[in-house]
Image 1 (cartoon, rainbow, N blue to C red):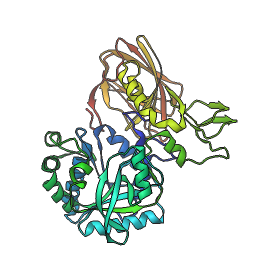
Image 2: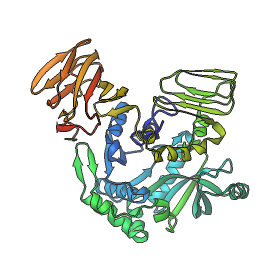
Image 3: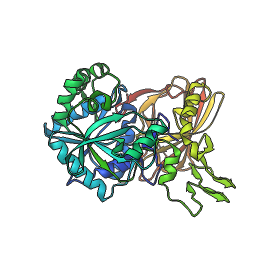
Image 4: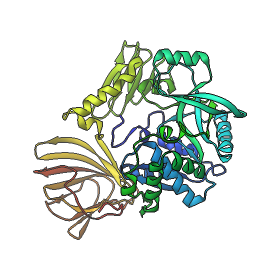
Length: 455
């Protein structure tokens, strides 16, 4: 379900909104937060903008990383940008966008406690109360108390084996490392400069030389790429004398595997969780997630069935952690590599498309264009296209001539023509596109003009 083109934070795993949208909703209170600052990969910039727009939520900014360099330089760049925009007293609540969190009263108490501690000069992390000997999380050991419900960090522990996890659970004073932080921008950057100067230099340089692109801020690639590929824990938190931990007990999961989705889901009397079109009979403790196909299960227990548009996974729910190695196997095989990278349905800032059928020298797609949106003015070197309108109104430009099409009308776009598709109407535009030619790859697009800055 999670592919590199649209990872898990941007899909609806636990309800009608995505994990990213749920994260935005937790920081939507204008009495507590400024508009959110989002740091993301350039490939996800339009997904971020679209999903924030769906919530009607303004953003302080969307910062685009030019290359992947782990969390240390990412958080340092966000801190440097926040200082530039809001001053050295700015406090950042750093939240991964792929976590599921129950923001109950204890959550907000912890947030206020962490914010006060960060303003006093500490770098605060949130420790989740351990309820089982979990081997998939790192741990934090509480040190001396520095206030009600706040402790110095004695040490960080990497993911332990089961015996060590059981011992820590029995001893007490250990929490799971959530990866959520509360930091004052100036304090964090001072410690980053002292403890990881290469990270600090890369972050400041990339912000100073950043450029604005539409509604996005692109960090400068040359300084950013020089940052060490290390986590913020390793670069700063494990070394600083200012680290503090707020132990919390609200429901939290990093949704690292399907069993975590099952644990959070609404279960029927037999312990089954299903999402999408599914029929379960004589089955218990099941997780069924399906995009389109109707899944029927008979007489099974402790099984996950995950049906996307182009692939199906079936495995023991209690052994869901084994999916990771399977994905690596799929990625290493050229015949299955695409299953780890792209969905059958691809989303674009103007709408998107679904692949229906492909063969030698032809491909059929379903295009959908949002009201008021338009694709780039473009041409292709190797393919011609036929468009058939299924729903809505299409404005089609071919070599400067504009044609309006309504339902059941079609048009031919010869190879090499300069063309553009737009939806001038108030409902979603849907078309069937038939491509024919010697090469049908998505990279056979020459963009001449584009409102999204891709030309």
